[in-house]
Amino acid sequence: MSSNKIAAILTQAEIDLAQHCLTFAQEEGAQKVRITLSKSLMNLIGLLNGEVDKTAHALDRSLQLQLFVDGRYGAFSTNKLEKEGLETFIREAIDTVKMLQADTCRDLPAPERVAKDARTGRELGLFDPAYDQLTAEGRRELALASCHFKASSAHSGDSRGISLLAEEGEYSDSVFDTLTIDSQGLYARHTETSFEIGYETTVEDARGNHFSSYWWDAAPLLQDLRWKECAAIAYKRAMEQVGPQEIEGGKYTVVVDTECASKLLTPVLNALGGFSLQQKNSFLVDSLGKQLFPEKLTILDLPRAAGETGSRLFDSEGVATREMSIVDKGVVKTYFLNTYMAAKMEMEPTIEDAIRVKVLPTGGHKTLEDLLKAAGDCILITGFNGGNSNPATGNFSYGIEGFLVKDGKKVHPVRELLITGNFLQLWGKLLATADDARPCLSKLIPSLAFTNVDISA
Image 1 (tube, one colour):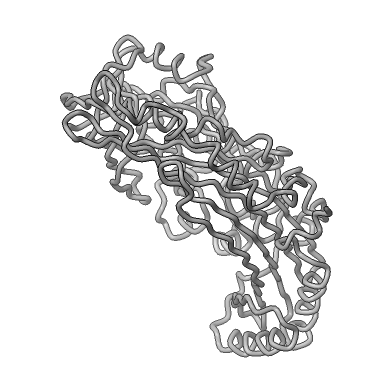
Image 2 (cartoon, one colour):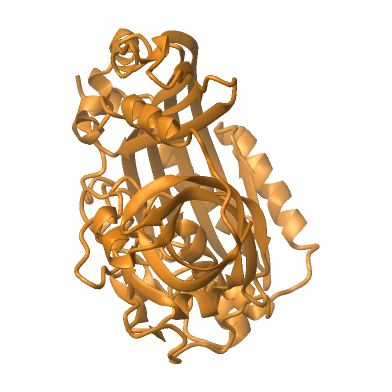
């Protein structure tokens, strides 16, 4: 069966319609136009205690229209893709833009900056041709085969009186196809499939207390999805939560598991974004070229890695991505400035956001276990629960859970603790990183170790 038969793949008729809208908008008075045509298909099977609990099938398509008219700008979207209706929609959109305040900073990116190598959408190898071979029954069989609840005797209880109370799971697969074109000749397409599976498991101890944990995996190709082990890992993680004990507050060495380490890096990336910088709502204002982080910290953007989750050849403006340093040995090397924010800030534009971030490992520690051994006595953070951070100052306060660790070994679980500090100061206390980032994430952040961190009980 040809992949062209997949319902979510853009048809030539739909692409021709988008091209017509581009031409029509210019004929109606728009000096510049950008159109993004997107289509997606998602199938989902939900499981509860080893049985199919729900199913979902969703097909969606939309056209986003960005108009530059007489120095004014407006963005509009619709999911009604019939020629006559779209022409009416475009005329009304142009009339609306003409009523807006002029903004000379709005413009399309310079033609030399846009992607020229994203013609088919398949260049990065993120589309699985096997997708159109999947059937409803095949999806159901895969989902049921991934269950742990019936396959294990664990739900009958163990020697500590702990039983498996509930197991919720979801398997889903999706295909996404998007085309971005503009009036300056841009033609950039991205097509990808995604397969995901996740489980949340709840166990009950002898006193009736409940403890839950989860595990998941995702991959652009079905053959790379680790679907057989997620339920068992979720169960093991839930069992490890049983019997939490209180500890005293104070200053601790802290190791943050790769699964939740993005909580500490994402605010840094956000603070380098043009909108935050321009609004002075960033703790990294005027940071470009300055060494604000320790020399051992290097963060790269690797957006063009073939076959890897999160890879893209272009951003939403169509600007070509490239490999680059975000932080190089502690020095801030780039802001993320789209065409508009760059003009507002009178700076050179980059791309609008980090695409596929990688924190380079330090210290020669391969695994989380290696990092725990190096840290010795510490707190291992495996989850963040609520809290907040101030993007302007970098101050934060988060609820955490995890384990007390002695001599590199887990002693007992801990929960209802609070970690407080400032992001710049925290990263300045970076001890080491592992090399265990999960490939299913677009942010490849390994487990992180910090010294002298404030923990409140």
